[in-house]
Image (tube, rainbow, N blue to C red):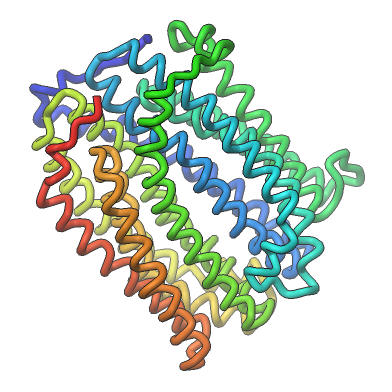
Length: 454
């Protein structure tokens, strides 16, 4: 399979540090560029109108749920691939790749059809203000179609990263973002655009970028992984492998879905406060997205290292490595959050001239000094547990917190106590840190070491 092994994982003690950073920096750049594409949509739309920002933000809450469902295939196959590659089992790797591509495509088609047929009702359920519903639905339908291309991007990227081809995935992310930026510029600033104007054009540019990314990733897969031609062209259904992918991927995706559902429901509560408050939330999340972007990159890099340790039965080393990464990542998250809070007046002043929006965003940015490191810590510890095969516990915990703590408290603080968006931000802080303490204890107890997948 053209597997790249840089370390003897059974004997490794300190070499994983340099190896980890060699994975981390390309992943950070890739995640930053992915964030840039999303933020450029918001920034460019902010020059168009604040209502357009709110409409696309609400639609993206539903799209994010769809992306979480798509994660069933990519998360499950990623866990299996990282351990199979670490355990040097080429036949198993081939079967995982074949079936992950099949499942990804199938799930994406189902999600695209669901959003197209039920999108209007779903937008009403999340309390989308009537003036925004038409534009939000238009954007939702167009982006839903692109989920098919995004599913292939996600799965192919997982395959490449499992084979340590993180730079190749980064190159595709760079190129995809350039295509997206050019498309957005054409939509909003050029005298003529074949993609359309406003929300329709921005969605069209996103679709174009995702098609491009899928094609280029397919090319890298086709050329750089041995036997890639047969895997890409001829998909072989394997019941056992599909079962394993779903068994691991469904709880992992369900944990993400549970979290996203809570955010979607809470966004519905926030939407009832008015368009200005919704816009303030979206601007704040785009300012603080850098911390979550960093978390995603650290989680992906640590997953690869942890997966290879576990695949070679070096499980105690995997445990120690994850704890070291977690400690340093939390400290870094606090530092970046402080910097973003200090810069928030300048950033939001550029995004919107509305004084109410500016004051709200600045306050939330300072509260995010407490929020974002907790979110970062959970992203890393959950990915470590998932990679070890302990996929159910984080899911059960997320569901319990979502429906017993987060949503009820958000309604209580936001509506009943009339603390508004600030009260809801405190709920987010409580949720993240309580869950992290429980998950950290789970990792330290190391019950996951008894799990064998490959």
